[in-house]
Length: 110
Image (cartoon, rainbow, N blue to C red; front, side, top):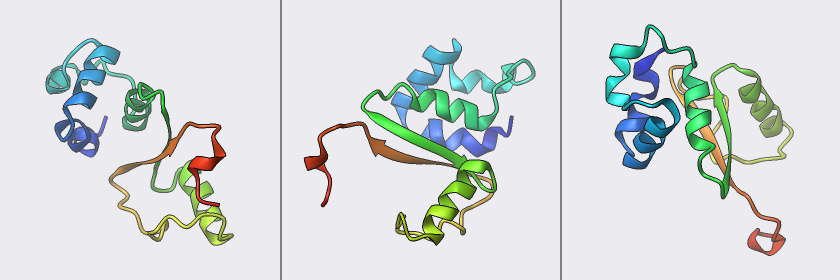
């Protein structure tokens, strides 16, 4: 697994490190010792950890995968404005689009 791809994800947020430990049974700091037997890809790790946030939905993607291509199509059709050019993302990073889970439409701009 490309450890340096997601290292900042865990180094920057103590809560994410705690969730990693709960999900995988060891501290992220021990990852180097266990990486030979670790089967989840970086994007799987990020997705599993973010699933712990029950009040949010996350659309996790990396450069060139199906989810990234879907987002590019939405941008091209002007369905969503991401505030950035979704085509120009670092191919060495994993990204997560965060969305609120709510059925209360009044919480959104209309």
